[in-house]
Amino acid sequence: MHSNSRLILASLIAAAVAGQHLRLAALAEGARDDVEQVLSLAREACFVRGGDITALKELADSGDWEAAPPSELAKHATPYTKMVGGWTFTKNGMATAVLQSAFLPPRSGTVCSITTMLSSDVDHQRVKRGFAQLFGTIIAEETDNPSRHVDRYWIDRGQVPPVKSTIVFEKAKRALTVRMVHGSALPTQS
Image (tube, rainbow, N blue to C red; front, side):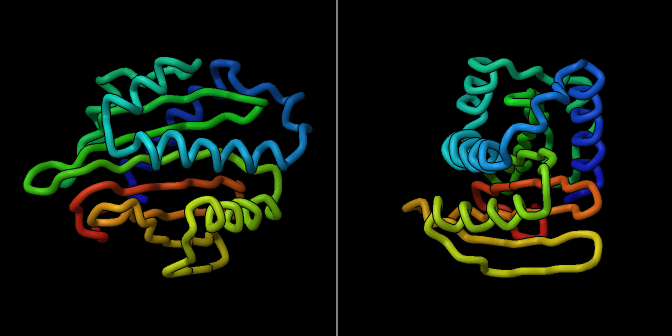
């Protein structure tokens, strides 16, 4: 993840926690719900709507998602992308941040990512298995080190190019990010 993405993600999650969006009592709910929620959000927000700026914004507007101000999004532009949306929300006690950026010309497309905290390390493995099953894909590349685990996938969507997806698990924090790239960007730019 680019350092700019990390900064905005940290500020969005901090805003969610500071805004009393995190209901601690609900964290005791079953991990199965957390995993299902992550997978559902990956499908509905990032896979189905992540390639369309308007569609993802409509999903955010239809839920109880709190939008980041445009001035905050503007601070996190890179030479390749600009942030076009950032939201936080809490569902079933699970604080989540959703970010969307658009590639700058000559590239075209978007990046959609969701980040949340998992209840346990076991949930990471369950997300990986569920993700592969949900999208009918296998891990294309896997990297593991003491601080994080990264899995990369290609998801066929009946169009070229396929969706490039990455699951990043930050071990110490149990932070999980699912990122999907829609469009013509080079893999090093996502």
